Amino acid sequence: MNQENVAIHPKVFEMIIANQSHELLSPEIQMMRSIEQGVYTAVTPSLTHTLLLTPFIQDQPGKAQQLTLLLNHYPNLSMISIDDEAAQFMAFYQARYAANHLDLWDTSTLAIAKISKVDKVYFPSLSNGNKNEIESFKMAEIEDYFEERKKRNNKEEV
Image (cartoon, rainbow, N blue to C red; front, side, top):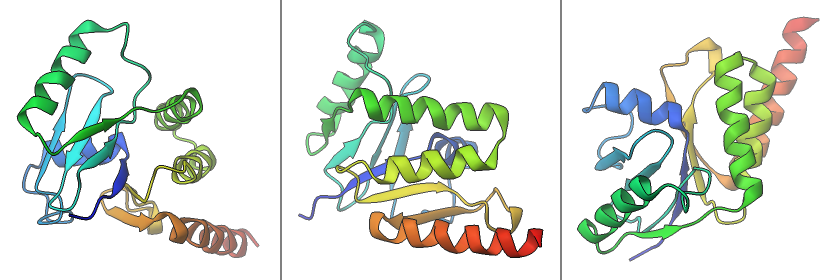
């Protein structure tokens, strides 16, 4: 079975949880779950390792217990912990949505994509201002995507 490390933006979870039969990710993403606030994981047919985009949970027994239950329920799923740098980027993500600054979104999305463990990133699309679409990019494609968007935005400002 192929292993794929996937980072999933919290906003994508909000969209999917709001509409469980979300067509944009089905059938690739067969099951998604949010474990309390700020802890996310996903299981796909090819996915056995998931990057949990959350600050450390060692000091939060409730979250640790729920993660243990999830891992016991899905024996093929293993947890990849993240480091301080990744946790900071995640906080940056959340700050972007609180403040609604597009430049922060670009910076933090690109930063998450550059974490060496991540093969693919799911995040909300901001193309044409449509925030209800979900985009999936492999890590190598993301820099090109943002470079093109930057050029397009610069042309629109002129």
